[in-house]
Image (cartoon, rainbow, N blue to C red; front, side, top):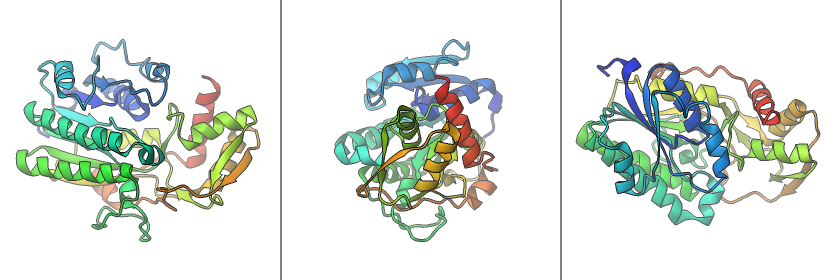
Length: 322
């Protein structure tokens, strides 16, 4: 990138979230100055996001601003004329099922908000724009593992469609203004600080309380679960990528785990059996996700290191010590 990566000024949107807070801590540890942006969306409790930031908030190289990326004046005021080297755009209205209930809100945050981030990046002459996309863009694609070269994307939820739109906006800004846009397609991220609405977190809570867990379908659906530390490795590596002005990469674990296997692994780590409540499959859910990592290995030197079982142990240890 032509700059010393140890002295960058980096804006991180969604800084108080699950992935955002881990990313902020890694960047600070590497010597970067970080400006964190978050609007404390009430999708889950303020106290959780506040706790996520507890390790970073007093760091001398961290400045945190409450701002909404969909409100340009608020966003610009938060940056206050800062000179930025890079932007890591993690803020989003997340989740396939919630997007079925609020498709307009999802589009507004994920598409209009990304448009604003790209405008800010252009105005601040940001050279490197790292974007959190999603494996959901592949839709129901029978050609597994999924490769970035799969040109035809068939998203089946408003959330997935919003991520496709955002990737295309990135291509436009890369073409028009020379912003290097790196889209990272995350595959089912889990680990400490995972959002409380996500399956592993929600299941752990219910299992420990002796409450039934909702299993949609017969438990055969499969996910490529990726541990948070591996995801952050990929995000940080993307800051160094300089081969093309526009690139998309999968960040996964290249292994699939069935829903039934996930529950069994969680039961073993918690030492408690789950009460399973089988329900019909949910609209918008895909039968499997599976990342081809060949491009990421070459372009980002990305190699996931944490097995699913080890990651579940780490999550359960964190959860039981809250």
